[in-house]
Length: 291
Image (cartoon, rainbow, N blue to C red; front, side, top):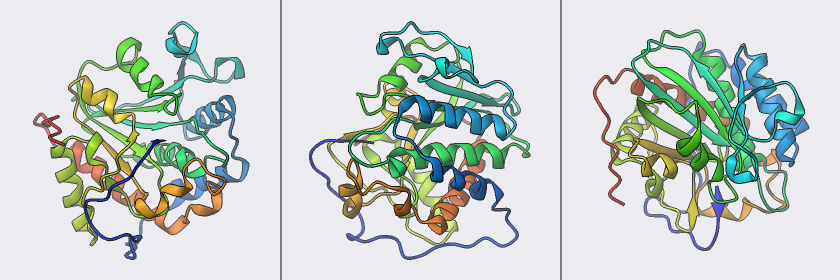
């Protein structure tokens, strides 16, 4: 998430969520597998790009596409992963479902500042990979397109290039879910970059897990969901930072140790259920954002 000037919280108090949900008889293997990636985290875009591409392949993806970004002084195009010369770029993976349209799961790979970029946004990348792993065995109504965007920190260049130039952009997008800065508090919508209807549905899912998932407003930042909202696509950014945590972003504090494995696991369960709920909706979702 790009941090600029000020923050403002419009719900709740300045504290982390204290309620952690537990789910019996749910396999934790996707989260356990991705958490190990934090041990070898790199700040370099090329390394982060390659690591997430290889992680998707390890989880069974057979067609990992890397699209260089035209706004990064390179022509738009696609190539197969496996060669470091392919990276950096947008990493794109499709999980086939029932063909009723696409749900896009996004996160950004680049980081900024002095830290390792574990929270912002290696955590979002890992969550996307865990969701791919966990949903691979389910029967889905919609195809799911995972897109790990490059150059978010440079002004959303990766997501803007994707919606403007990508040969992989679906014509029928049911919803876009953007994952940011996960593992400190349980996830909540960012209202400035989220469709109101998608926010409401997420709050209802949060209630099922026994916690208040009301939107938390953070001003002076931007996120990749905004490129899709501009296209008229229903989109939401889910993040796990509160006003108290903003000093971590871009600082030397952004290291793997800030990510709580229990919070990350519970965030995974909540977001996975949210995807299931959206996948079960057959009617069009209103993309309007009144904020």
